[in-house]
Image (tube, rainbow, N blue to C red):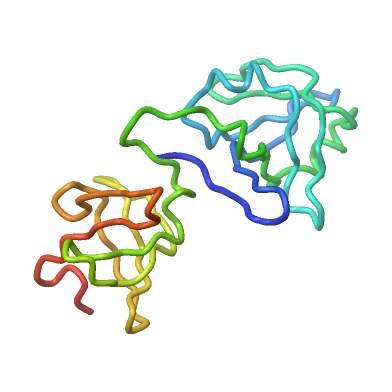
Length: 178
């Protein structure tokens, strides 16, 4: 799983976060949120988020600064201008995300899915996906209003049906208990 989606009139996916200026000519270092590092070299346009209205900017160049991508984007000419972008997210339209292999999902695709047991009984909804050392955790808002975290492993998550908008959870004793 990878990436985080942003809703709104144009559905966008976060692919990185600006962490610092690079040099004096307005380039920015980016913490990549993408599992596909090759995407940075092909990037021609990106949205700079976390503003009242995220703005589209052209990508004018790419280099690698150690382990981080370094981007030169239109409209940013000085280190001070780049500094003002620190902490802002970079987003692309949903149709520009990298295709994934079968049985692999973007995190944002799981948010909002119904959580059901194998018999089809509604358990709740997926409200978040949290990274964890062993496996990601599906955060469920249960039908009674409680929150539960379910490890994203086959023993508990038996199926993800994006078309049917549901995940099938095997609720072993204690898994969904407070």
